[in-house]
Amino acid sequence: MSSEKTLKFVFEKQNKNSIRYKEIPADGMPAVIGSIYVQKWFAGDAKNIEITINKSD
Image (cartoon, rainbow, N blue to C red; front, side):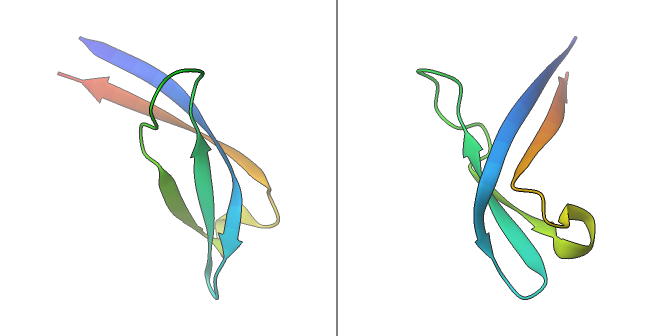
């Protein structure tokens, strides 16, 4: 069985080589991941990103 969820993140802080994004949890739900770091070469100047996560058993 597998389940998929798309999580939304918003710009939080910029470091030397990476950008930290903070998860925007769904209404009434706790964060699934919290904050993540994405390398600047990939993130560019994106203020919002989405990540799709698959859970398989």
